[in-house]
Image 1 (cartoon, rainbow, N blue to C red):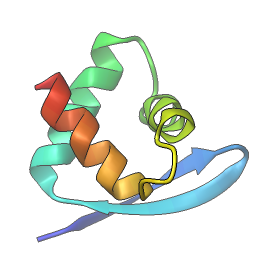
Image 2 (spheres, rainbow, N blue to C red):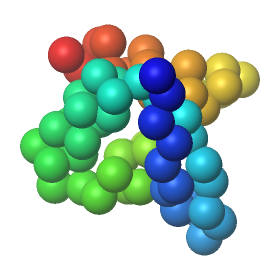
Image 3 (tube, helix red, strand yellow):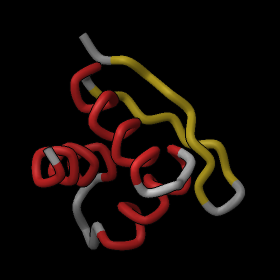
Image 4 (cartoon, one colour):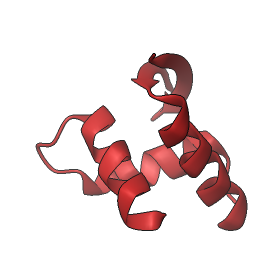
Length: 65
């Protein structure tokens, strides 16, 4: 089941829906890197190219885990 969360990207609230397992990895990665979740998602957003944001977050989580 997807969980929706709001993150702030470039001053705008953005809704992102991911499975809880991906959120857990993103939360842990943000904490380990000393970032807020929005800060981590902003980094992912900057590097994602044409890939959808949710897909980029999933790929990040798979690579990070």
